[in-house]
Length: 155
Image 1 (cartoon, helix red, strand yellow):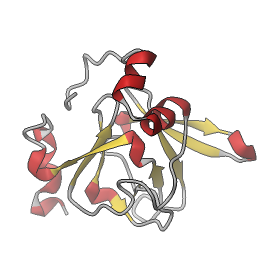
Image 2 (cartoon, rainbow, N blue to C red; image 1 turned 180 degrees about the horizontal axis):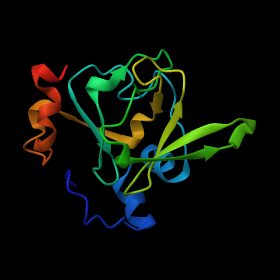
Image 3 (cartoon, one colour; image 1 turned 30 degrees about the vertical axis):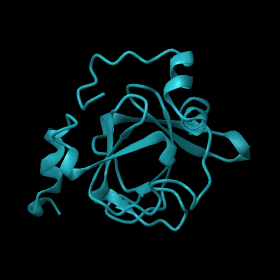
Image 4 (cartoon, helix red, strand yellow; image 1 turned 45 degrees about the horizontal axis):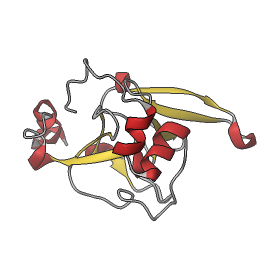
């Protein structure tokens, strides 16, 4: 997939089971959670964007990533509010707000109101739901429109 997902057709369940790892499938399709501090992106500091592992939807920028101390990748905001959907989750006898990708409907994680300013939000995500694309590969992978996010004046 590329940044232009207007023609995205979600794969069948059987296709997803073949194309995703067991953990990616469990997290994105069955609201699973990976282990903290033992996942691919919790401690990644490279510049780039994070996309939905299922659809390639551009979701979060490394410029909005911060160390929340939770052991999962955390962000103050999505690249665009339209790229994520939220809804209340009352599983495990608590109120949480689940975050899903807008196009594929992949479970990404949860959002909490205890993040740093300026948003005060903490999008706490599963690495298994994401694929990281470094700045140097954005153009080649079809995400060149996101290069301005990493211009020196964008900091």
